[in-house]
Length: 315
Ligand code: BTN
Image 1 (tube, rainbow, N blue to C red):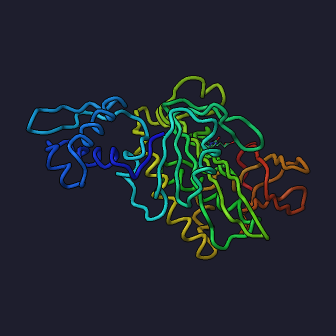
Image 2: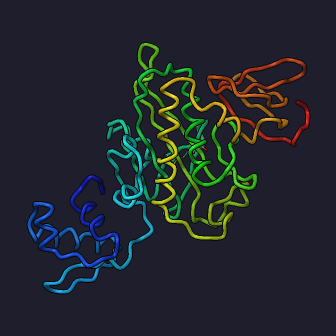
Image 3: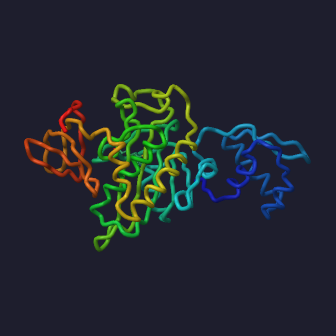
């Protein structure tokens, strides 16, 4: 398990601009021994970082692997709370389970690969080392459990803002009409208050195999270029924090959510826990519910899934 804050992370940060860094000077500056610096450099090399060294002169970072190691994400963060602790595991059952154990609000857990990645509604979520799978832990001070849907909407919105997609209610992100990302939200509530919420985000980033057959896509397939995983993750977190602050401060970014929502105005099939029906998606309620007009009736859908049927001009 790799974490940040950590010495190895701080050493990478010092080297990350590509300049020549003197080991002895770095040890003095960080208040550790020269051997500790040497060990950190050695560990970075074993993780795939290419670092040149010249005796008595210093170290120079030549290249870093495209892996969302905690320090690579931390370098790009502009947040105050999200990412206060960052963890990376090569393989995890599900990052949701790990973040629950890490506990701290603001903690973010990444996995290279998940053995039991979970999707919404009991589905499985598959991704590879070329993609992003991460979970974060939040302690919303004043959100009743029935508003949990809003938290997942803002997570989807943050992904949209980071990668340029549109939202499919409740929180799939579409690029060119195909799913590129999904959000899973799990909460712990007590006495009608959300104590802690775990937000899991999966983004198809650099994968290209087997997605189009499933009606899905990846950033690489859509934009025809390779993405830096830490950069994409940091962009999501940098977008999510102000949305979260707006949500816990009051009404939340409902208008922005509506603006990004591809579902509105579309004819949809709704599959909720209790029923299935078709109608036209009209609006998003203050608690994140989807308002659907069906057979002259207006229905509120708090949880469930929708299938976009075809664009409808009805207003
Ligand atoms: C969905 O579209 O059904 C939601 C997918 C959520 C997947 C992410 S990947 C990181 C986190 N860990 C999980 O096991 N699931 C979420």
